[in-house]
Length: 319
Image (cartoon, rainbow, N blue to C red; front, side, top):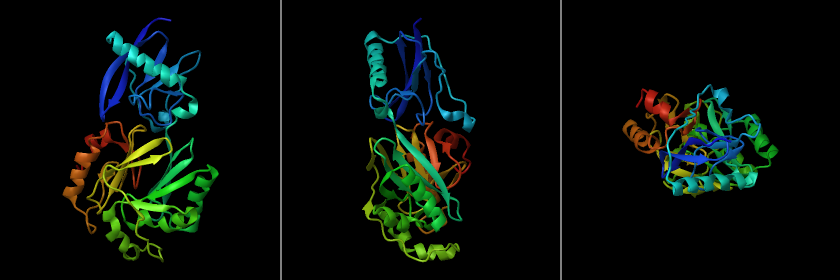
């Protein structure tokens, strides 16, 4: 087979740089977000290579299920050379990735649900090997919604570790008590959410939301920069106040995801007219914390469809 030189996108300390590798096998490299991709990742644990590689042995390169999102991903072929030592180093990285057992190459998976009258997005993020999972913003407000959430978790034999609340508004925490009781797990949130938790019944009455009880205060405090381990993967807590006191986002670097709660939406931002809200604070959180993530980071918000950091930097008129 002829030698081919391909551009590979590497993520190093949060920045995206370009390097090259020459491999004496025909290889196809898709520069895409590493989510639900197959069949081989190169490399998740060594250098965070942000690419998918498939040996073309009579196979058709499958890549990512991106077509359902009508997105176009880049494929670039470059005619440049690396120094021998750098080329060899990257070749070794690819070889190591291809030799790993399949289960050690998997990343986090996610499932989303739309619950309660506010069409709030609840997320289950899980490791398909260990079956460990976290539930982000359980907004289930009735028995039917609770059963939908429990049915998914139980049918996939997942092991819930904790509930994570991105903030303390009622549409995001209304399901806390039911989920906590059902699985015997704790609720984790930023320490500054307590005032909103104490107003949960008042919030429900204000919006005509059926809610008869009170939400217990979180059991675990999550601080900015804290790392949450889920199976073999991690998410980082990013403080993003402005929509509410104690608002946080959750960043999964390897997967290229960030869960922003009600801080950042597709072409919009969270309201700032609630107690503890501030437009200037929210704008600063988005500009200085979220917009410093890689452009192709997928944004999963508390309401509505997903977007990317790049799209919001370019098209969000509220910023």
